[in-house]
Image 1 (cartoon, rainbow, N blue to C red):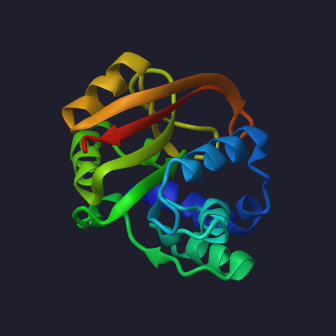
Image 2 (tube, one colour):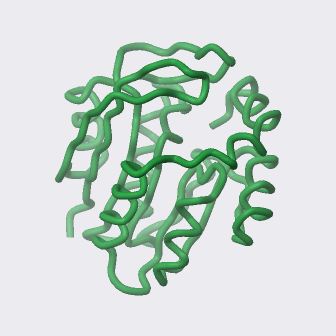
Amino acid sequence: MTDARTLAVYAARAEAYSAIHHGQVAQDRLAAFIARLPKGGAALDLGCGPGWAAAEMAAAGLRVTALDACPEMAAAARARYGIKVEVAGFADLAAEAAFDGIWAHFSLLHAPRAALPAHLAAIARALRPGGVFAVAMKQGQGEARDRIGRLYTYVTPAEFRRVLEQAGLTVEAEETEPGTGFDGSPFDCLYLLARRAA
Protein backbone atom coordinates (compact mmCIF):
# COMPACT_ATOMS: atom_id res chain seq x y z
CA MET A 1 0.00 0.00 0.00
CA THR A 2 1.52 3.32 -1.03
CA ASP A 3 -1.48 5.66 -0.98
CA ALA A 4 -0.44 8.51 1.31
CA ARG A 5 -3.97 9.47 2.36
CA THR A 6 -4.83 5.90 3.35
CA LEU A 7 -1.62 5.57 5.36
CA ALA A 8 -2.36 8.90 7.06
CA VAL A 9 -5.80 7.68 8.14
CA TYR A 10 -4.33 4.56 9.71
CA ALA A 11 -1.51 6.55 11.30
CA ALA A 12 -3.99 8.90 12.98
CA ARG A 13 -6.32 6.11 14.11
CA ALA A 14 -3.93 3.25 14.86
CA GLU A 15 -4.80 3.04 18.55
CA ALA A 16 -8.55 3.13 17.95
CA TYR A 17 -8.30 0.56 15.18
CA SER A 18 -6.17 -1.77 17.28
CA ALA A 19 -8.87 -1.82 19.97
CA ILE A 20 -11.57 -3.12 17.62
CA HIS A 21 -12.69 -6.73 17.99
CA HIS A 22 -12.79 -8.03 14.46
CA GLY A 23 -15.67 -10.43 15.11
CA GLN A 24 -16.41 -14.12 15.26
CA VAL A 25 -16.55 -14.54 11.48
CA ALA A 26 -12.97 -13.29 11.14
CA GLN A 27 -11.88 -15.47 14.07
CA ASP A 28 -13.47 -18.53 12.46
CA ARG A 29 -11.83 -17.77 9.11
CA LEU A 30 -8.44 -17.44 10.77
CA ALA A 31 -8.87 -20.70 12.69
CA ALA A 32 -9.76 -22.52 9.46
CA PHE A 33 -6.76 -20.95 7.72
CA ILE A 34 -4.41 -22.03 10.50
CA ALA A 35 -5.84 -25.55 10.38
CA ARG A 36 -4.86 -25.82 6.70
CA LEU A 37 -1.19 -25.12 7.44
CA PRO A 38 1.37 -27.68 8.58
CA LYS A 39 2.15 -27.75 12.31
CA GLY A 40 4.93 -25.26 12.98
CA GLY A 41 4.68 -23.93 9.42
CA ALA A 42 5.65 -20.49 8.16
CA ALA A 43 2.91 -17.86 7.77
CA LEU A 44 2.84 -14.29 6.52
CA ASP A 45 0.35 -11.73 7.78
CA LEU A 46 0.42 -9.33 4.84
CA GLY A 47 -0.89 -5.95 5.96
CA CYS A 48 -1.17 -7.12 9.56
CA GLY A 49 -2.80 -3.92 10.86
CA PRO A 50 -3.26 -4.15 14.63
CA GLY A 51 -1.67 -7.60 14.69
CA TRP A 52 -4.46 -9.74 16.13
CA ALA A 53 -4.20 -12.37 13.40
CA ALA A 54 -0.41 -12.58 13.57
CA ALA A 55 -0.66 -13.03 17.34
CA GLU A 56 -3.20 -15.84 16.94
CA MET A 57 -1.02 -17.58 14.37
CA ALA A 58 2.00 -17.36 16.65
CA ALA A 59 -0.03 -18.71 19.57
CA ALA A 60 -0.98 -21.67 17.37
CA GLY A 61 2.71 -22.50 16.92
CA LEU A 62 3.27 -21.04 13.47
CA ARG A 63 6.44 -19.13 12.56
CA VAL A 64 4.94 -15.75 11.69
CA THR A 65 6.19 -12.85 9.61
CA ALA A 66 4.06 -9.72 9.98
CA LEU A 67 4.24 -6.79 7.55
CA ASP A 68 2.38 -3.48 7.53
CA ALA A 69 3.03 -0.30 5.55
CA CYS A 70 1.93 2.03 8.37
CA PRO A 71 4.62 2.59 11.03
CA GLU A 72 2.05 3.70 13.61
CA MET A 73 -0.07 0.58 13.04
CA ALA A 74 3.04 -1.62 13.30
CA ALA A 75 3.90 0.08 16.59
CA ALA A 76 0.38 -0.50 17.91
CA ALA A 77 0.61 -4.19 17.02
CA ARG A 78 3.97 -4.51 18.76
CA ALA A 79 2.66 -2.75 21.87
CA ARG A 80 -0.57 -4.73 22.13
CA TYR A 81 0.69 -8.21 21.26
CA GLY A 82 4.47 -8.10 21.63
CA ILE A 83 4.96 -9.35 18.08
CA LYS A 84 7.67 -8.39 15.62
CA VAL A 85 6.30 -6.31 12.74
CA GLU A 86 8.27 -5.14 9.73
CA VAL A 87 7.20 -1.85 8.14
CA ALA A 88 6.80 -2.78 4.47
CA GLY A 89 4.23 -2.54 1.70
CA PHE A 90 2.87 -5.07 -0.75
CA ALA A 91 5.46 -4.12 -3.36
CA ASP A 92 8.25 -5.04 -0.93
CA LEU A 93 7.28 -8.72 -0.90
CA ALA A 94 10.21 -10.45 -2.63
CA ALA A 95 10.31 -13.83 -0.87
CA GLU A 96 10.26 -17.02 -2.93
CA ALA A 97 8.71 -20.30 -1.73
CA ALA A 98 9.03 -19.06 1.87
CA PHE A 99 5.54 -19.46 3.34
CA ASP A 100 3.01 -22.25 3.87
CA GLY A 101 0.27 -19.66 4.17
CA ILE A 102 -0.33 -15.96 3.50
CA TRP A 103 -3.16 -14.05 5.21
CA ALA A 104 -4.33 -10.76 3.64
CA HIS A 105 -7.58 -10.04 5.48
CA PHE A 106 -8.93 -6.64 4.34
CA SER A 107 -5.46 -5.33 3.48
CA LEU A 108 -4.87 -5.99 -0.22
CA LEU A 109 -8.05 -4.04 -1.04
CA HIS A 110 -6.06 -0.84 -0.43
CA ALA A 111 -3.75 -1.59 -3.38
CA PRO A 112 -4.51 0.25 -6.64
CA ARG A 113 -6.40 -1.91 -9.11
CA ALA A 114 -3.58 -1.74 -11.67
CA ALA A 115 -1.15 -3.15 -9.11
CA LEU A 116 -3.23 -6.20 -8.11
CA PRO A 117 -1.86 -8.61 -10.75
CA ALA A 118 1.76 -7.89 -9.77
CA HIS A 119 0.99 -8.15 -6.05
CA LEU A 120 -0.84 -11.46 -6.50
CA ALA A 121 1.99 -12.84 -8.63
CA ALA A 122 4.42 -11.92 -5.84
CA ILE A 123 2.16 -13.63 -3.31
CA ALA A 124 2.07 -16.79 -5.44
CA ARG A 125 5.87 -16.78 -5.69
CA ALA A 126 6.21 -16.29 -1.93
CA LEU A 127 4.09 -19.36 -1.21
CA ARG A 128 5.60 -22.81 -1.08
CA PRO A 129 4.09 -25.39 -3.46
CA GLY A 130 0.68 -26.25 -2.03
CA GLY A 131 0.68 -23.08 0.10
CA VAL A 132 -2.59 -21.40 1.06
CA PHE A 133 -3.63 -17.78 0.43
CA ALA A 134 -6.52 -16.24 2.39
CA VAL A 135 -7.81 -12.88 1.21
CA ALA A 136 -10.79 -10.64 2.04
CA MET A 137 -11.87 -7.86 -0.29
CA LYS A 138 -14.88 -5.58 -0.72
CA GLN A 139 -17.23 -6.32 -3.58
CA GLY A 140 -18.01 -3.76 -6.25
CA GLN A 141 -16.40 -2.07 -9.20
CA GLY A 142 -13.71 0.55 -9.67
CA GLU A 143 -11.77 2.47 -7.05
CA ALA A 144 -13.10 4.94 -4.49
CA ARG A 145 -12.37 6.55 -1.14
CA ASP A 146 -14.51 5.88 1.90
CA ARG A 147 -15.92 8.50 4.29
CA ILE A 148 -12.61 8.87 6.12
CA GLY A 149 -10.40 9.01 3.02
CA ARG A 150 -9.07 5.47 2.59
CA LEU A 151 -8.60 4.26 -1.00
CA TYR A 152 -10.32 1.00 -1.92
CA THR A 153 -10.19 -1.24 -4.95
CA TYR A 154 -13.51 -3.05 -5.31
CA VAL A 155 -13.80 -6.38 -7.13
CA THR A 156 -16.47 -8.77 -8.34
CA PRO A 157 -16.10 -12.46 -7.43
CA ALA A 158 -15.63 -13.53 -11.07
CA GLU A 159 -13.08 -10.80 -11.74
CA PHE A 160 -11.03 -11.56 -8.65
CA ARG A 161 -11.07 -15.32 -9.22
CA ARG A 162 -9.73 -14.68 -12.71
CA VAL A 163 -6.89 -12.46 -11.45
CA LEU A 164 -5.97 -15.05 -8.81
CA GLU A 165 -5.89 -17.83 -11.38
CA GLN A 166 -3.76 -15.74 -13.72
CA ALA A 167 -1.29 -15.36 -10.84
CA GLY A 168 -1.08 -19.13 -10.45
CA LEU A 169 -3.49 -19.55 -7.53
CA THR A 170 -6.43 -21.97 -7.58
CA VAL A 171 -9.52 -20.91 -5.63
CA GLU A 172 -10.72 -23.62 -3.24
CA ALA A 173 -13.38 -21.80 -1.20
CA GLU A 174 -15.41 -18.61 -1.46
CA GLU A 175 -17.65 -16.75 0.98
CA THR A 176 -19.71 -13.60 0.59
CA GLU A 177 -21.44 -11.71 3.38
CA PRO A 178 -22.49 -8.20 4.37
CA GLY A 179 -20.33 -6.16 6.72
CA THR A 180 -19.81 -2.69 8.15
CA GLY A 181 -16.55 -0.79 7.66
CA PHE A 182 -14.48 1.16 10.18
CA ASP A 183 -16.07 4.29 8.71
CA GLY A 184 -19.57 2.95 9.41
CA SER A 185 -20.42 2.21 5.78
CA PRO A 186 -22.07 -1.10 4.82
CA PHE A 187 -20.33 -3.30 2.27
CA ASP A 188 -20.42 -6.79 0.79
CA CYS A 189 -17.38 -8.89 1.67
CA LEU A 190 -15.66 -11.39 -0.61
CA TYR A 191 -13.44 -13.93 1.19
CA LEU A 192 -11.46 -16.48 -0.80
CA LEU A 193 -9.08 -19.32 0.00
CA ALA A 194 -6.70 -20.18 -2.84
CA ARG A 195 -3.74 -22.49 -3.18
CA ARG A 196 -0.51 -22.53 -5.14
CA ALA A 197 -0.13 -25.71 -7.16
CA ALA A 198 1.88 -28.40 -5.41
